[in-house]
Image 1 (cartoon, rainbow, N blue to C red):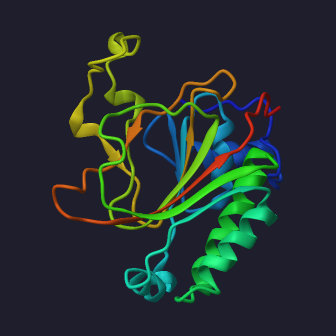
Image 2 (image 1 turned 180 degrees about the vertical axis):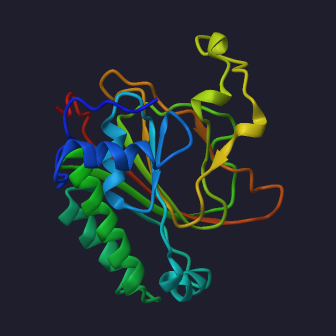
Length: 233
């Protein structure tokens, strides 16, 4: 069924609504997702029927720095404006024992991208190595929008609407899931997830991959809005 968009999401530069609709309509196989190799498609997260948007990308140029990151573990937490966060990030990634200018530039670019999509002015950032199962069960976040990027290791798991038994959604436990339909964000890709506080939200069900049992590690970037957005109109 073709997607009908009543108005073009902000900050997009398309010649027509038809051009944007075609991009979103052809970018995913699941009704609740926008998946594309174009960053512009991330704005599709604002569509009422969508609760996850994924930008597929190649991060090969970061591989050398990510390999070095294992020798110089970094945990960076920062909050405030983009400028405030970049000051903390620069100190961690450009002036510490390890130098990671390409990673710094990539995170800075993703911060700017997330700011354009959310139109928020304050954010919370976490950039860290993870060796535990952060969230073992499928859940929704109590926020509006969140950006995730797993730079190394397995990415976030998420559920297409088609995989969920709708009759179980109103129950606090035992949501019935077709496990064969579970999807995973690829390493390096950018995912924006819709949470329960997004206006008129249908939040995405997702969870972290199990890595404790296998001894795997993930290097994860997480950015949240630091203010709840009441309207994206």
